Image (cartoon, rainbow, N blue to C red; front, side, top):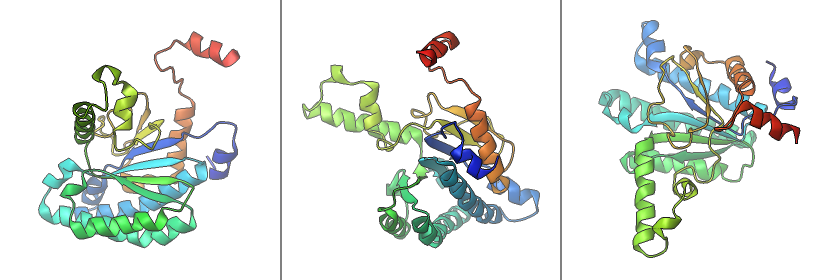
Amino acid sequence: MNADKRHTGPLAPPAHVAIIMDGNGRWAQKRGLDRSAGHVEGVNTVRRITEAASKAGVSYLTLYAFSTENWNRPQQEVDALMHLIVLAIERETPDLIRNNVRLTMIGDFTRMPTEALERLRQCMADTAHCTGLTLCLALSYSSRWEITEAARRIARQVAAGDLDPEAITADTVSANLATADMPDPDLLIRTGGDMRVSNFLLWQIAYSEIVVTPTFWPDFSEQMFYEAIDQYHNRERRFGLTSEQINNEKNR
């Protein structure tokens, strides 16, 4: 679907799209290249899909860039990937500013190299004034880590006497997550064909619509992104209700 039609049509775009960007290494190996070549090509896809999301009117785009489990990969690949992420974000920051895109990050930053973290935080500061799409990078991220940290924060509030345990609700948990300032994803896209969510936003995607494509991330196009949004629009989001209840609500 044409990008202009997407954001001027009668259907509202998903407010928040989350993507598990999988298949960079397999894309490279399929072509007889080093895995790092897939990561390099994947950066170009990040640029294309960020632009597509902005054109589509999406408010938040969260990309799973590096999981806590990725630290267990061969050290050479980890070092190259972290270096590439920092260079790519620094290179793209002027374009992010021109396109009114704000950069933010979620993850366990205690495990990240100090210089890389400082440089990424500078990019965040440089785009902090932007009011369009929010591009959130999940770096050194794991949902179990995030939920554990939220539990610790809540426990400290209870121990300090600032929170009654009986007053804890699902909203309390959400407010203590790394994504507290973002809506839950409406749509989760996974490239590369694997049918799992890989420890990504487990709390937040409770009612997300999920689209899985066999296409490796470097080959994921703007057209495929818009087609995923089309699939989202063709789903009936019931949130535990029946179709009849949903229709009755619409007809009121």
